[in-house]
Length: 97
Image (cartoon, rainbow, N blue to C red; front, side, top):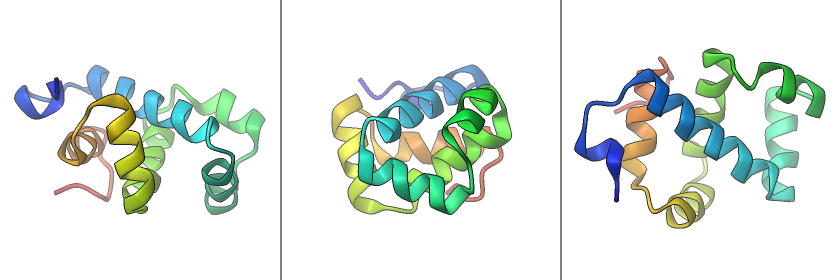
């Protein structure tokens, strides 16, 4: 079920989706390497900022910037790309629409 596309996206739901994205990225070595490089973050910084809405917004923007990664994540979580866009918008991300 694509719960984000069917209801108003709350900040809590958006943060949950972003944390799922972060977990997915962390479990995909190539994506994790690219995320760390792009963000300048370290593994420790990720742990420290995993509850920061701005950081979670950056996670969503990162996954939205890579169509293949987005498709893989959405398939694994049974979500639509629109759900990720809505979550990004709820967290104030740049990649909304």
